[in-house]
Image (cartoon, rainbow, N blue to C red; front, side):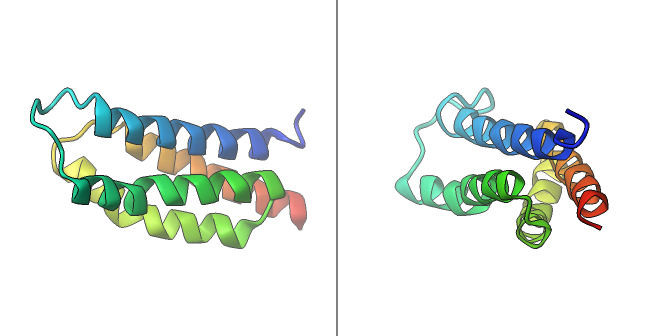
Length: 108
């Protein structure tokens, strides 16, 4: 189990980010207005696609792909944390980083 902890954390962070994105799109507690099609496309490319790629990267244990997903998510998570959104997204990013570090140590 200890050897697969990095995979577990990476998968858990990716799935959590995916669920958080779905909640943001469909059950947003901060707004009651309907969203445009452009918002769905933007959220897909900002949050859902990198989360899906991070999920795959964690399963196949590819640190480079995980780093790419982290770099892709950092600006948006910083934006959400400044824009008075819940800081849960920062927690998921930190779990991604921990997963990368542990994956590097395991491969080295």
